[in-house]
Length: 427
Image (cartoon, rainbow, N blue to C red; front, side, top):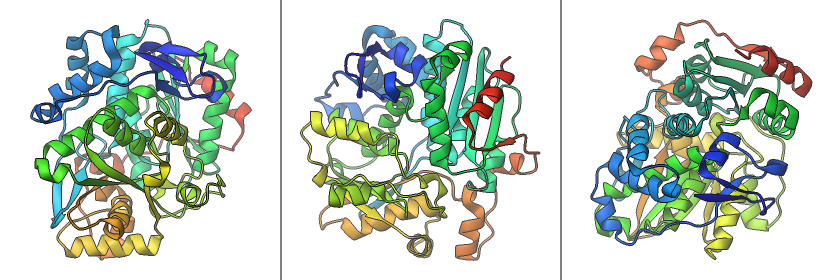
């Protein structure tokens, strides 16, 4: 598999290099030089989740890893289901929260851990990542206890849900968590600064586990195929998918699935008040505003990292960005949709509810709608209980970590201070 740096096209790397390196020069994202196309989609969709996913990922990776090795990696990573549930006639929820940390990030985080282990030369590696909520837990649990891999996770202090925080800030060992006194965009900027520091990168073997890393993005392609496999051929030929969007990795993966041949009619990018992309699609002006804290905190991102990949893909495939649906939803509207779904017999949380609301607004007669549910409702227990007047029971993983002590340290938005932390926590 050959990938190139979107910002500096002359930098070309293998899959293994892209996984180990994370980002290219000038903070450029890596993108595949070519994409395979699956012609017999019906036959592919007839296969089970793990073998089908291994075929998709093996076709992307090419001869860099043997097919049997990719199958082993996928089998180790995807040990949980991604079911669809009908919430009303012709509208389905894709549940991506059945993994160990109850969020869609488990797919990408676990496959990245497998990928890094497969391409590593046993050198020292420091994973540095920023999280707006769910990435932290997925990455922490995927890499917990792995030899020669140190993980440092930055998150905005007070701006993720308490249960999200407990799930990854209570582990210890090779997992180090840092609460930054700022917002997610500042955390993301600190990560990028670290990658720009070449001496630091070499000194600590720096890598990223955000959806910046191509292996995480590739893993996410697979559950779009899994969703389609659970539908009739007629349903999937008129399929519209609404994606709750923050850093836009999930939507990028969906568009890549379409590029590989999955017959998706169109996508909808659903955001909260941090609506940089919907405004850009409307006006053509990229005008990020200061990040606003919302009840859908995993989407509190004003400068989404993966957007350049979407523009690159749309340019390559000659897909007009104007074909991409979009919509921004307020906290009040999100709460209304949580109540609407609950009254229809489906328990949802704010992120999924946002995707549902925009889908409902834009779905046309004869189309099948699918919206992504990216986290278990209990991860947002305070918000959901407040909206519904309920007392959601905590599933096992949350109940276990809820009573554990937080191990995070606090830091100002200061790169020099972060460098000291990165050097101090080395094994």
